[in-house]
Amino acid sequence: MKRRKLLAKLDRFLAQPNDRAAGQRSAMRKVLAALKSKERKLEQKIADAEDSETREKLATELAICCAQRRKGVERLRGLQVEKRRNKK
Image 1 (cartoon, rainbow, N blue to C red):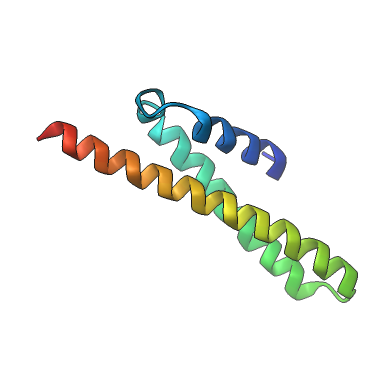
Image 2: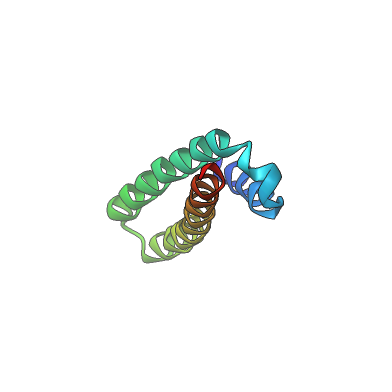
């Protein structure tokens, strides 16, 4: 999946209320894992890029991916904590 689709999918997960998002934790994990691999590929492209303009563009894309992935990870952890509280 391309970055845009992954980010759009993650955005839909983040916009859902907690009760609906809790049922989709595994799907969220898959999207976050895919974003992590995209981040690594972007980092490699930045390292390989010779043009500073290209590097700057890729760095911007990387920053967006990192920020969105970080938000998704925080939300996923929050859902996991909530699930543990509800079990007790």
